[in-house]
Length: 271
Image 1 (tube, rainbow, N blue to C red):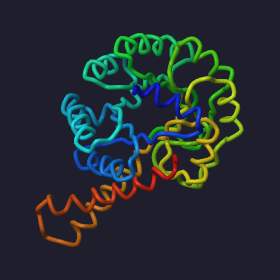
Image 2: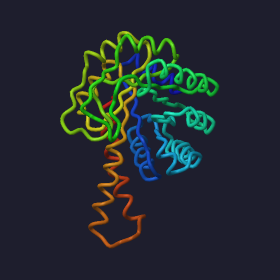
Image 3: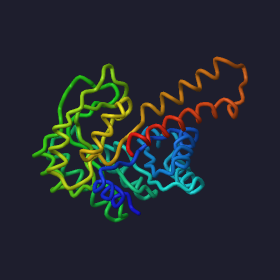
């Protein structure tokens, strides 16, 4: 089943799939063990910085081998690409899905470049996600509010032919300084106006009841990244502070297990 097919089937049933970023073998292992344990599909996400760290083919090979080894239904997705060269390279390397993020570009430029990404992806029957509105990235102003505009979204989807749209409804990337207030009214409007699955970015730290409500209003893909990094690093720090043992084969499993527990809980958010 392609990711496009999966997302559209979820849209019909008011359910979502978890999309988890991985950064190394250990975080990948924790995600896949959780998916296997819960018998859940999962989207494995990579950003450019993670690809630069692990190497493109190495990261793809790890993900494909892991999905096969754990017998988990899953897809490999390029998260937040802002250049078409990376999109093409990832498609050639076997990604099932790509996100071209032109949300910080002028509207017409975003349409123009996203259309190119869609055309490239069609050769590989790959899913294409895009973003409209302002979902603050790390280091950006998290207090700025710029929700996805429904009329713009309709034009954007029609012009580009994308398969899924990441919407700005009050989430941000990174840590929340206060309880996030999601604009469910806008989400409902977008869901009514658009025929494609919607995506929630910045789901780390969003309360379970809010994620579930968003899923009931059209969110079919829920992205988790910050909590995975944070959970892994905090547990590595803790175990290293308690021992002089330098054998990473006994230290890292503690952090892997913590990631596994986190992801198992997150599956409850989308089902």
